[in-house]
Length: 217
Ligand code: AP5
Ligand code: ZN
Image 1: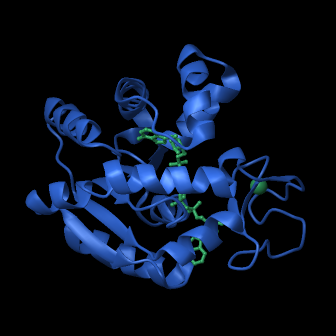
Image 2 (image 1 turned 135 degrees about the vertical axis):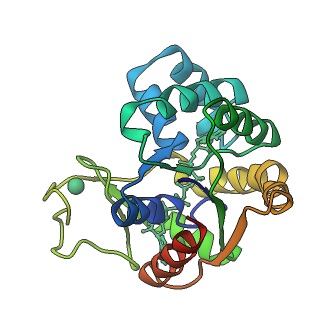
Image 3 (image 1 turned 180 degrees about the vertical axis):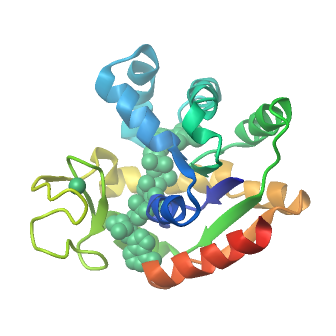
């Protein structure tokens, strides 16, 4: 299967993508994670992306699509993928259609995580992650089971994202509204859109997504 997770910053795309990976044996492809890795490595794409990401804008379609296309062909993706944070523009959606057609694959579903603005801001403000394995946490909604120790790898260092500051969040939301929200209509027209109420707890949303994915595959 090929699944897309749509939704505003902080909706829970990364959190739910990791749950779907485990439940269905799929691979999470997060363009945000790929870009942060490119920035950290100082690649040419990373140097171009760094300033845009710090300001909360969208990295160019060419860079993002190239990064995703390369990853899509890795052998571990043969079982199926969850696209987390891609596509984000009409041009990226059309590029994805072409990538899938060239591989004789089709989109299984575009899963739209629906949250209100207040929840989104609260989720971003409270977010932190394990520095070693990247497992995501939240100050109130998802604390490590043992204080100060990562549930997954027992790491003891945690980080917060540089673009989770209030000024950057409003730019990210504006970019989402302008460029990405219209993709719901794009996928509805293909009959692929599935809306999921993402205001519930992490486990409730995960259960609902699992049911939707089971019906779609
Ligand atoms: P990206 O990394 O994709 O960031 P984003 O879309 O802003 O999404 P987030 O990672 O902030 O949120 P999420 O929905 O994954 O939420 P999470 O699961 O972490 O992109 C970053 C930047 O890269 C962009 O601004 C852009 O510059 C660039 N970029 C990336 N892709 C691009 C593309 N395709 N084109 C162009 N540019 C691109 O959850 C958030 C928090 O809430 C966590 O703490 C979590 O524990 C908690 N939480 C999750 N679910 C729940 C729940 N149900 N209840 C309570 N708390 C919850
Ligand atoms: Zn960890």
